[in-house]
Structure formats: C-alpha cells, structure tokens
Image 1 (cartoon, rainbow, N blue to C red):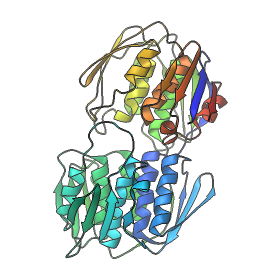
Image 2: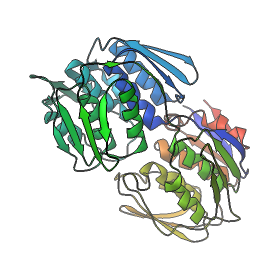
Image 3: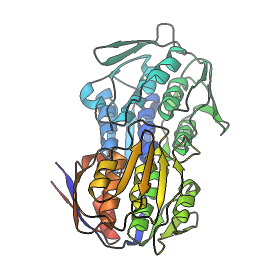
Image 4: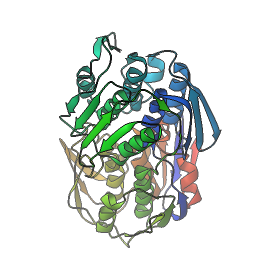
Length: 419
C-alpha cells in the first residue's frame, strides 16, 4: 500500500511544470481505436489511469510504446477484439469511453461496468439511450454491457438531459465513422471535449462545435493517425495553486498555454491571493491570511468544476470566516470531509451543502485518500497542518497527479512516499 508522509508548515516557493490533462488524454487514447496508422501523443502525463488505458489498447490489439516520459506512440489497423474484461475495465471510470470507440470501429463491443472513484451514482443511462438512437442494440448481462449494430450505426439528433462529459465523448466517438450526420444538443462544453474534437479533426473527422452546447458530426469512412499535443491540466493547476495558497507560499506554474484559469482565479482572489497569468505561465502569491468564500457552487462548464471542490475546501478550512459549498454534480463528493475534520477542520454537511467554519490551524493525523480529488485535498491540508500527516491509499492520487511528492518537494514541501 502506497502512502504519503507529510510534515506540514513549509511555505511552498518555486516553479512547477504543469502536466498534460488527465481528462483529455484518456478519451483521446480511446479514440485511437478508430484510426489507421500511427498516432504520436505529446505532453502525456505519467498517471496510473494512462497506463490502464494503454493496457486496454494493448489487449484490443494495438501497439503502444512510451518513447519517453511524455510521448506515447499508438499504431495499428483497428481492434482485434471488441471485448474488454472486468480486470481492465474496473481500474478507472474513463474506461467507459471505449464503449463509443469500439462500437464506432467494430460495430459491436462487450465491456463490464467501469470502475474509478466512488462518488455516488453515475448511471450510464444517458450514454446507452443516445447509442440506441444511433442504431445500437444493447443488453446488460451479468455485469457486462453487450452492444451490437444489426443494421449499421447511423447518425441521429440527440438531446442530452444533462451535459454529461462521458456521454458527449461516447457519442462523438461512435458518430465519427457512422453513416450520416449526428447532432448533439446540450453537449458538455468542457475544454477537454474540445481537445478530443481537435484531435479527431486532425485525424480526418468532420466535426463542428458551436461552443454553446451543440456539436455536429458528419460521419466519414476512415480516420488516419496524427501527431497531437495534449492540453495542460487545469485541475492540476488549481491543485498546486491551492497548495501555495494554503501554505502562505508563492508558486509559478509553467506550460499553462491554452487553459482558462479565470473560472477558479476569481476564488483565489476572494481568498486574498494575488494571481498573474502571462498566457504561458501562472503565478500565485498567498495573502497574509485566507479569507472565506461566501458561496462556491459546482456546475457544468463554464461553471466551477466539481473536480476542484475538494481542493478548494482544504484551503478554506483555515479561512477567517465561513465558506459555503454547494455540490451539484455528484451525490457523494464530500467523502473527504471526515478526514479534514479529523485534522481539526470544522465542516458540517447538509445534503449537497457543506458549511466550512474556518479554524486557526489544522493538525497532522493519519487519514486515507477516499478518491482522486479528495486525496489531493488531504495532501493540501497536510502541507499547511502542524505536525506529521500520513495519507494512505495514495494510489487514488496517482490516477490524476504525476509524481505528486516529487513535484511538491521541488517547491519546498516535506513529503515522501512509502510503500
């Protein structure tokens, strides 16, 4: 069992090279199933979820090579099997993206229900309903989803009841090689969706996005491989900025080109931090004390991301007043609260509302990462706490952060990994 041991009280100071985006690389890796030839992906983060996706690609029959720490080369002429066993699917939630890509390429697939963080119900009903409207016949047997396309996959007009990121990605992946046009109304608008679209267009797909939630896909006969650079990770950026704020430090993030930091910068400024964005880098300097944020509501993009909720809460534990969170995406995304309270925080949860009363300081404790972002929140709290904190189940954190102990050590944190 991996665990992180952190001695708190060190102000972070220095520069961090920002990693590629987890939420971009994973759907793009699944999209390579649709292509012929070689794809070279640059700025690939070194994450356990990325390795899980590469294992699935290898199982399907593609050749995957990691040439250096941030370049992955995928080659092949399609899938040799359309079945993915539970041992591979259960590693991560984003494995569900292979549903759309395998149907699009093979006209059939059999996958188990995906794994990942336990954040409450995240049904696949939206995904499956959309695929049925495109001619896919679906049955669920013994924990597996079995899909066939009796008469060929075709385009359709699909209105999503909720702008689901995963459903939007799956529809796009199924539609790029389908017969006819597909229109997605109320599609997710996250930047990582746009990165997937840019990659597919470089491969030869015909996709138009209004930017306002409507996406049009005209099916083509084939896609080729290409070279593509993965966008920077805005969630990791917010996490390291939160670590700087919580410790009273100052950190510069480099390689941030193309990410929109305004969505979360406004909250750091409300906390009393100073933030400067040059376009290529982002600098944050903490204020003398952390001020509370009156209201922070998670919403689909362009609202505040649910993935940032936990890390912001860890900073506001020591604010000089009361902060209120409202979680509107996942039902069980306050699982990190018990650990933060164990460290001395004063947080009360009322359904989807969490009220954070700022305390003078946090204290080290033994805690366990409940999920990816909750684990990151515990690390941030530990960096600012008095004494030693041990965060067990660090494998959750490794799913989304590249060598987090090395990154934080490079800017002054006292953190080590133990097995």
